[in-house]
Structure formats: structure tokens, C-alpha cells
Image 1: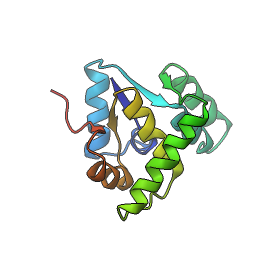
Image 2: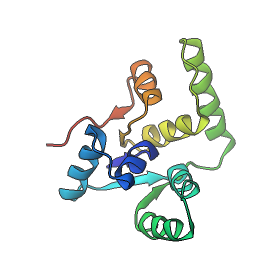
Image 3: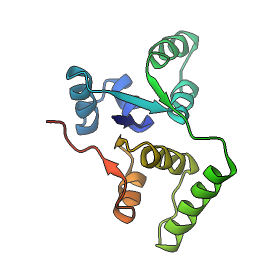
Length: 136
């Protein structure tokens, strides 16, 4: 299963041509199972330019599998710990949401499809995260 990050979806919706958008297009074409994080749902909707685009995005996104973090103290401790550990390794993630998405991918053993340099840096220090690089 694949977790598609906001950074790829925005490019996909804009019609960008880059390797990550093309990878998503292959995933869709081959009908591979994918979903989005609840944070991605929110980020994409908040970026809508007008009511019509908001409604169109909401309609599309609501058909996708959406992954959530468990709302427990332990989840937030785990997220804080990951942020803390990364900082100790010389990496300060720019977004706590990226850490939440990382935790979702790790906890649910999902391949992460992203177009965000922060995830490249995180994955270099976190060998357990699976980054989608190609589809066969």
C-alpha cells in the first residue's frame, strides 16, 4: 500500500510533469492501492483557490483511503521523540506534519510517495521508512 504525500498530489492536480507525479500516474494506471494521510486531505483542501476548486478537490479526496494517527498520548510522544531524535542527528524538520505522516507510514508499513526534500533527509536517517521510488 502507498501513502501519497501532499507534495505529489499538488503537482498532480496542477498538471506538473516531474518524476514523482509520473510515478503517481503509474500507480493510478496500474490500479495499485494508495491512500492519503488525514493531514494531506486538510493541506490540499486548504490550498483551494475558490469554492469550485474546493468542492472538486473534496469530491476527489473523499474517494481516497485516508490514514489517521491514533489519538493517544503515546502517539504524540512517539512523534515528539522522532522529531527530537532527528534534531540530535542534525536534522530539524520544517514541519511537524511531515513527522506525523512519517509515523503513519511507519506504523502502517506503507510506502511513502513524496516530492519533499524533508522526507529525503528524514529517510536517510530513518532506515525503517519505505520510500516509493518506482513501480514494476
